[in-house]
Amino acid sequence: MPKRPSIRYRLSFSKPRCLALAAVLLTSLVAQAQSAPRVPLISGGIGMFSSTYEGSTFMQPVIAPVLAAPLGPHLLIESRADLRGLLQQNNNIGPFHGSFTASLEYLQADYIANRHLTITAGRFLTPFGTYNERLTPIWIRNLQDAPLIFAIGTRTSGSSNGVMVRSNLYATRKISIDNTAFFSAKVSDGQFQSARAFGDRLTIYLPSKRLEMGGSFERFLQATPSEKPHRNSAGLHLWWSPWRSPLQVRAEFAHGPHAAGYWIETAYPLTQLGGANSLLGRLEPVFRMQQTFRITPQPGDGLPSADTQQADFGFDYHLPHEVRLNTSYSRTFSSTNGNIWDISLTYRFLFPAWKGAR
Amino acid sequence: MNIDSLHCIGAISLLLTASISLTAQTPSPASGKKPATIHNNPGERAFKANCSRCHYAPESLSPRITGTVVRHMRVRANLSAEDERLILHYLNP
Image 1: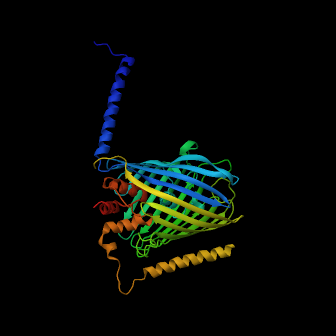
Image 2: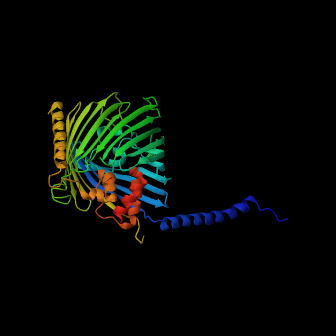
Image 3: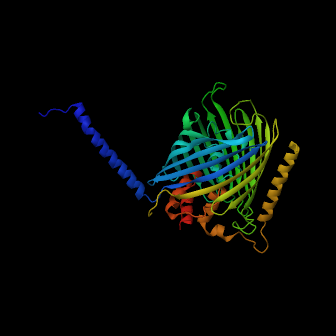
């Protein structure tokens, strides 16, 4: 009877087998990715932002790259990072000093289960309201600064770590209903901060009117030293872009444990004055009105410390080659009034991840 | 400038924008009908109904990544499978 090999002997054989198996799996994965009909892309924006508030100016060079890599017909890997510098003076005098921050805003795997359902796992943008998921790319937004109520429902970092179920429940030419539900675990350290929470967003869209209405809910499940767990945030949003006009109307209302507020933004690209590529047609006046109401003082929640009203007036200019110039003036009324002057230049890029045939 | 003035400016701006929009929407007697392109091309209609509410179309788009772009946006914008198909065909006929 042959001698049974020892554990050590078997382990010494299992290493090359494991390596061979891994190589086969990796090769098949790469082969699958290469034979898939879709090529990975690299996209995102590069921008330079300048903001002046009460005589103090700071500048932020930003690179926000996006990667989207399909793996076969059902799986998609997506990621976006934010690499940002901050240049400012000490006490508004002397030379500018710089610092650097990097954050991973999402790194998620999407499994497209069927024509209605997509399951997402990993780190994703918290689906509360519309601003976080749609308007945070630096090359999309009409105004440089996020709305004052942005932190309601998206705390602590705007991103969540966990599972999300996105579903297009019903879609016809007249109406589309979609729902997004998520659960997130608490991560306190490093680049992957998130809160323990769950939430849901239901949206009804009328394509024939280009009118969208929706509601969001989030339940915060973790406690902080000064707060009890299980606090709720809720929000409503409305977007309207009439078919025959370039007018855009976007509005959100949100109510959280510490504050409530709203913003209404209107933009009107002057594309009807000679077309989208004419000198005037590239100009886009923007106006936003926003207001917050403080319910309880809570330092560090990302919201204004007192009741605040703010009006933002902007002029954006869409230059050729995906370059965009945004300018705005904001007047803030709060415990102390102030003026904010913003100017930014962004460039949007989009190209295949590698060269080659389809 | 006080808060009442701010409200006035806000209201005037909104009314001005709305009036410009309504003026622009009013069809001229000569036209009298909707732009033909919106209804003739379902892909363009799907693009305008979904994508262009947030952003313009890219000035140049490699055919190699059109499928990835649309798949990426299907997930991010909760597009229906039918809209994904129409937009893909519109961007990469």
